[in-house]
Length: 435
Image 1 (cartoon, rainbow, N blue to C red):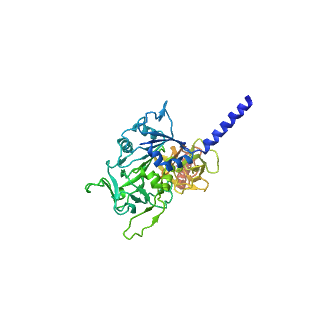
Image 2: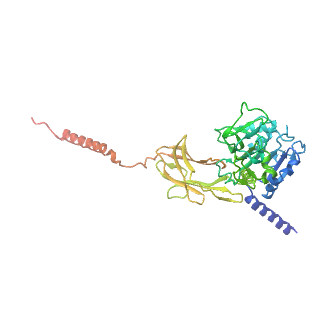
Image 3: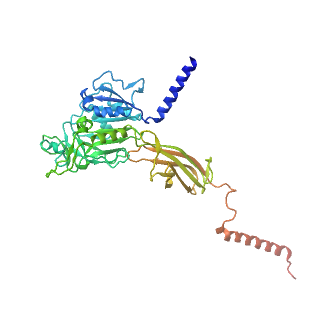
């Protein structure tokens, strides 16, 4: 009995180890906070696809007092989805807790609409995202779906996707969007747009005459993404309908006067949403570095210290998570910096095609404590930073060259001085004046 029990426990441990190594680096537990239970059915395709990818989704209403988001100081979930744009408050979850959730390295997807609540606005504001006023819509009288011809042109056929290969590949059809606009900080290194409006789009109350505009043109953001310094990821969508079954299955055709614009049997919403959620939940775009080492050329063991002007070699293994396993990361812009306060050497690492990046260089004639640093920050990829510190000393007294070519004139002057002193001494001692 004891043997069989031990065997079962061993199998459980082995399976747990293998499942841990094959799982997403960010985990699979998801909490979906909904405005009402109807959203679960109107957005069922989105949630069923998450579950098909291995996620465990728990649902909670915005006013559900039984929501256990955090228990005994531990987070109960790895990811948070907030589909409650009109809820003035989410019971059991405060905006500060959502920000703390992000600070812990976890991921959030937030969808708003024209009835945006203060709860979403507070979270977005802390991430440098500013939504337009409640009741406003994104309007475009040129790039709208033909089905909205007799409407107010708030149903956009948007196709201004960001150039971010780490997040999504080519989307084969425009995305249907109806919702509120965002304005984001342009010079932020952490926040960037995923989908923007066309040059003819603007944000305003659809029933009022146009006066002052909050944001317009290509600066108008429809969907934005935040890659925090701790590699947590946040998606802000100005449209809840973007994730709906209706928009997933609807056809799309940009309006044109001659009616000859291309018609797509299915919008790009499903494809777009699947790719941005895969990125948000860290199924892709996640990098890790390992086996970073430095040593003298011709050696394999790292020394305690280097000497100035020595030729050294640096190498590091960089891998990328592809949703199933770690694979070699291939890029041609990974750089190494050799730093003491300021960089003394900055060089691009060579990639062997198998994820190993390496380089060789000669240390400068400066001694102190130096840092070998690889820091890779690119849009859509997790922040990568690998550091090795090692002291560099000057030559010892017995390591200098005995004779230097440029010093031969000084050697000659010293020898001539000693020769002159010898001749003078001999002459002074052994020569007598004649009388």
